[in-house]
Image (cartoon, rainbow, N blue to C red; front, side, top):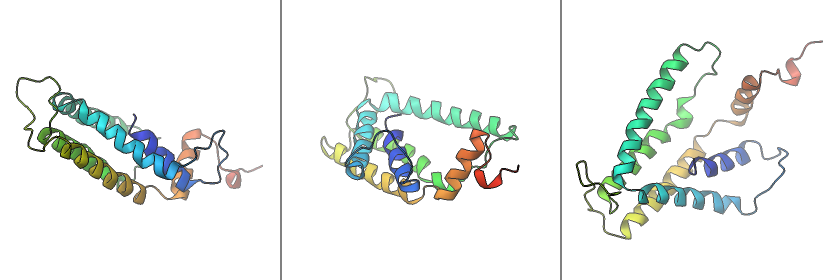
Length: 164
């Protein structure tokens, strides 16, 4: 949740900068990537025991969503190119956590290895987070596709398609 907010903020700012917003966040170009790094550090600090279990739950969730979407005729089409970074991010965070310092209280396998020294583990999370953040920004949906999906989900026809 915390990791998705800065990605959404930056994506929407890039896709619809002219949109009317009740609140404008000064410095978002710097704060959004920084917030993504902090969110990933929070994930990392929760420990490998928590992260591997969340990974299993995420895989199960994606399978359930995939099955539900296969039978939903009204769902918008998915553009997997814009989310190619997502599995890399999840897997990468899992690997860094497995190799890092935070076990999360686990004493039974699978355990983290502590191969990445303290402080370097956080540098690894920060660097990896910035790579993922800018990759996600580079592959986000184009403005027209995003607006089309929003209109489709709202159930309203865009103004140019309304017939009187």
